Length: 402
Image 1 (cartoon, rainbow, N blue to C red):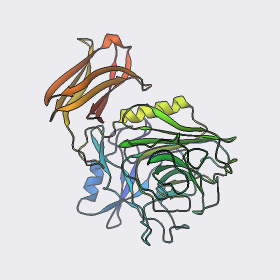
Image 2 (image 1 turned 180 degrees about the vertical axis):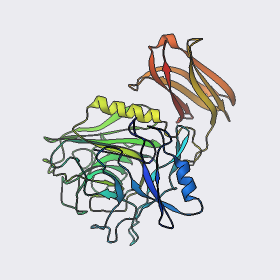
Image 3 (image 1 turned 30 degrees about the horizontal axis):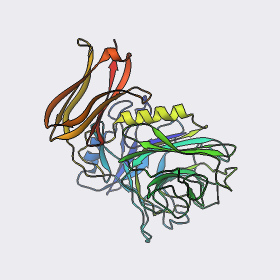
Image 4 (image 1 turned 45 degrees about the horizontal axis):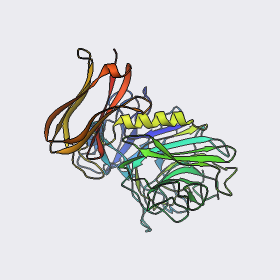
């Protein structure tokens, strides 16, 4: 029912605008994709915003429903409404492409509004106890302990309408209502009048998430069941943090169908975080569907070839390429290291299953090559993922056609 991203197209056939920026002269420009189904054309933003300041004025819904997000209006907590996010504050690289996320800065309990986006007049979004699915990719290093860095389903009147009137993803280390194990941050569900890591206030099965980029999922079924999942947006599979009945007082649900980003249901605006992509669906997603989404997110290459990132880490890998060489019947990976590093190069299939490890060792500075004999795997599309010193820095998809 909605697909939002300032980073990339979430449909292979999407060629429209991802988001809109506004400069200091109140002029606006739509930012599209470099190619159909591809990454954001950040150069267009850079050109438009040169020698001026820019904010993100609209996040386009790529789905046919047109559930676009604009700055949140006046609400219970936002006496004057929210403000648009700084358009250049969350620059990262994804698969070698410089792109911008949506940086949400909280108000800090001052009279100044925080950042936040909302659509109270959506089409097709689940209401009442209807089932739905939600996912987002967010920065794992930008968060705080306050309410509420959310993405998902909320009230249509910017007011706290009581328990069960929301169903949104929360990411942060808030312990005001509920929490998981460890010190946080956690992926939790904002169900209104409570952030829930499970079905009790302190649910230890929901563990702390420590990735640089986080995949966060919440799905709610009709008939008193819901689930929370989290994963590393750069590698690996999803972990189920909770799957079971809802907290007491939250069934049946009373969802209203608005979509928000970066704020709570009553526009509470002290939460902080950075959003890169997300979607809202109707129906209760199957685990296999969510696994495919996670595989696609990993293949997108968050943090690959990073030159500017939220963590500020410099790259250690350069001149990297992967290709299938039919003459030798092998996958060839060439890479250069600026300094000696621990290197891991692995190959995954489209279901996210590891099929081979090409490198797993301390490698000196210089140019290197790794290879995989293609006869050891079936024809198809595979993802080559490189980790340097424990962080994914590069990934590519290759096609084996033997």
